[in-house]
Image 1 (cartoon, helix red, strand yellow):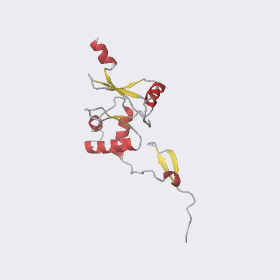
Image 2 (cartoon, one colour):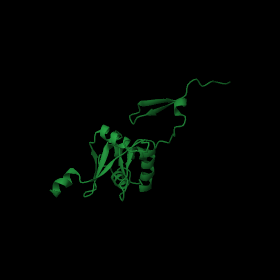
Image 3 (cartoon, one colour):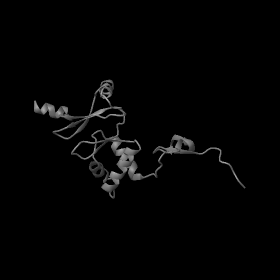
Image 4 (cartoon, helix red, strand yellow):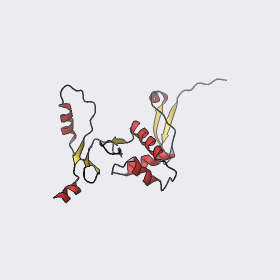
Length: 159
């Protein structure tokens, strides 16, 4: 006895058990599927709940209260995976540990040379895009700007 598959799909579920996305077999072609990981979910929730651009070490320390066996190696691997699949953004500062940001909307960052915080900068997108596109002899595909200086708290202290 044979049968024919008329429709194949994968349903992705939210934490509350509700279907949030349906994807057909055709839509899934070329996509990288991965197993569910409780630790990866905890790491993602931690990054998304913070606005201080934490390092892997800060995330690991914070999550050890709820997941004592969580290793720093696992945190690094899962953060790299989450960046690769576009769930979070990596913020690289020369000479510093990578930071991670759950805010995927267009924004730029400031690295404070005094307190080492990373904060969002309200630079109008049009101005930054015009600057990037004005570069001669290059094809701009994407851009992220990190400004180095003093955050508002540190700038006030220096006055």
